Amino acid sequence: MSVITDLTRMWLTRSTKPFTFYNEYDQSLHFQNCENLGLYVHIPFCESICNFCPYCKEIYSKEKCDKYIDALLEEIRMVGSQNPDKKQVTSLYFGGGTPALATGRLKEIIDTLQEYFIITEGIGLELHPRNVNVETLTKLKSAGITKISIGIQSFQQKYQDILGREVVDIEKMAAALAQVEFETVSMDFIFALPNQTYIDLKRDIELAFSHGANHVAIYPFIDFTFTSSKVKVMNKKEKRALLDEITKYCLQQGYVRSSIWTFSSEADAKYSSMTRDNFLGFGCSATTLLRDQFKINTFSVEEYCKRIAEQKLATSLTIRFTERQRMIYYLFWTAYSTRVDSRDFEKFFGKSLQKMYGVELWIAKMLGFVKEKDGIYEMTLKGAFYYHYYENFYTLAYIDKMWGIMRKEAFPEKIEL
Image (cartoon, rainbow, N blue to C red):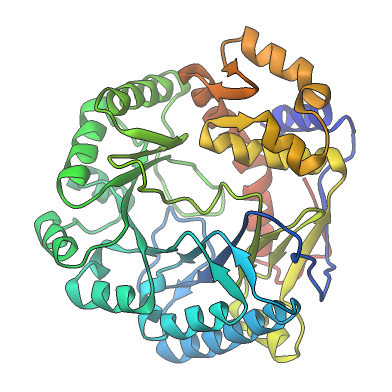
């Protein structure tokens, strides 16, 4: 798999040099002139650990969570105070972990962020199904949360058993959602589980939209090497058929497709922390993407708190982009929305997309991966599948390697991808 990603990287960056992350960082971050800047906050605590989950997390304790949030607030102040005026940002997302475990301090975090940033498109937060109750939802809304994403994975017990999850009480959850309204209620599902069928996935989506959701995300199962999951990976042919069928079903129902794996029943219902040109990340394992660099914080809660106590940013690794590397990063994650506007690319880089990647776009059109109209490139069903297929290779060749190392080493010397 690394051969595919390596050859693609070399071709698209016009260089044999790997993506190299070094154990270095800038204490001052140049985000002041970034447009379409987003914010992300990571809360790494869970009451139990799902064996398939690759994200940075550990078992919750109130004492450790409070100490962590104290450090998190200080990191926000250290970064936010670098700008003399309040910086306008698009959105704020809380991920984890289970951010609802810090419900009592979420308003404190949001208030601190709003001392330095003006959030224009709402605040989202990930939720475990067990946290979907009137009391918790009311507190979240009072804190300023406008969007929630509930990690269902599947409503069906056979798949909850495979994933080691508890069965969701869908009626109880729907009753709570009916009492406390949010701008977006998203429900996450995993597809490509063993023996999963179109009927299985269609039933989950129907249940979501009929029980309080106005947005669904259907993410593929990815077998990270460092997790203890024993779930078998679905083969390529079956996976493509399943993705194509469920996509066609959602579009036939009139649902709006806002990314490769997300659909909404209302045009304004959106939930995505990925498709942003630039973003600042706060908390352990959080990433920051700026015009000329990408950095990632340490995965260690203990080391994160120590670094912040020393008034140093908790950055573990940084890559300084070449222009082509930044272009590829921009195109890869912009394409997640299923469309790339050449005018946006030119505005961001000051160079023509056609001039930089005209050959690749022509090949993509000839292969039936994209359609183009007025400078906007949109993925076909075939293109969406192969984006997913390549993203799977990318995840296992790059993200799996990086996260696997960072889970063991708080501050690695260097990682080449």
